Image (cartoon, helix red, strand yellow):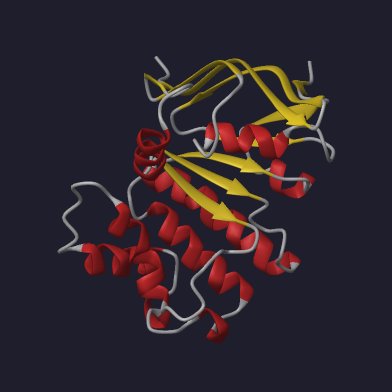
Length: 226
């Protein structure tokens, strides 16, 4: 039996803009199984970013229920939500979000410093192992400005995996890369999914990226396209 990692039920998100309510999500329900690779697509304003923020525990829904790995995280407090986010979710962003003055190794180790109760005696060893896995064993002491875009994204992927999350959430992970580097990054993400079993959720506008996933979720006007 498949294990459901992401169980989102009738998620709604409303933003108050002055006197106007803006409905970003209008009742989104999705299930994602452990080990799946899922693409989320949709036009600008469809609710992709809002859904990503909710699934990544960066925000809470106005209403609805979100069960992550069997735990209802819909309305828990900010500090507890941050703890769950750091433990359960790894993020990969289009713009890499690396610390510019830190080495690749230091960037990968960063999330461990924010883990409650995490013993970080082996942090450097764990980070070095991940850099090796993403093909950057010899670049661990390089800073972001000394690396290509593709290499920076590999560092970001290693950083996203260092806390051993159950889901990896990638927001346009190939958006700033040329086609060759973008293909290499997608191949790396697929390989990580196979080897580590991590559930992979990719927000993208690129059909070539979506083709490498197991399933596509399309959003239109804050709802899942039927």
